[in-house]
Image 1: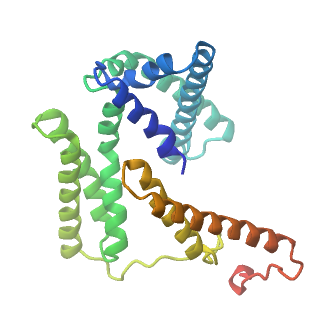
Image 2: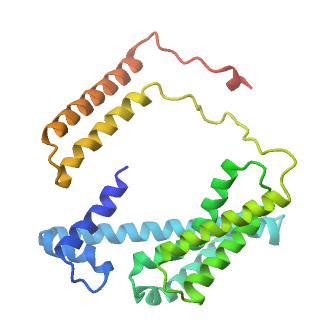
Image 3: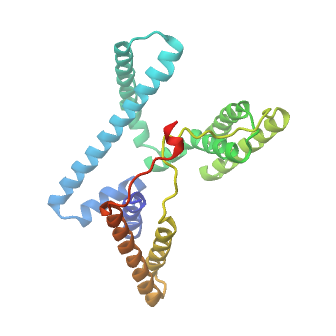
Length: 278
């Protein structure tokens, strides 16, 4: 829940303070250099370097696992031993690292900055996946073939419109067009060749899905907290903000007390559901 605050707020501050920056990528380092004292500049530089290395390491581990388990073991060598999979994963991770280092200068010189370039690149697979998930929820008779075709057409259409043909569109409009194309493709295939029976979700009972008893009370607290935050947007809602803060504080105190009472009350015991014994 803190990600929007941590990621968006520094950019908004930098946008208002330094509107003449040549690239949006310079917003964070400019803000750090001009706002923080000198000792903290090095500290934040170390934090940023650690975050980059950690993210890159996680990316390499994920890519190596996907290749070794999803491609090598299933397609190339189905009888591979665990040690062999580890070796293949390390070699593939090294290959990806070398390619990343070679591509990095080209990414650094992206015309619209790194953030915008990454968002455009993620759109290649994000929108087709989102379309498949949404259509699967609302149209249970759409077959798996429709998802596969929509995935391919979505990727090809987005790359064609955004990179090859070079229409004068913002990439968000291209994402919207790709979404509409995928929806039409899946509906047509579902109409021509629907599933014999509607798809139904099966509960594996791996996670307790019983609703939290305090969800409505917590929702009320969050709602009034957001109303109180609106005061910082320049709205004349001082008294409404005070009332909202009071209600949110009451809700927080109640949730803390209820959690403490639930943990220390000996009468509260866990009774497993009948389904859990299956």
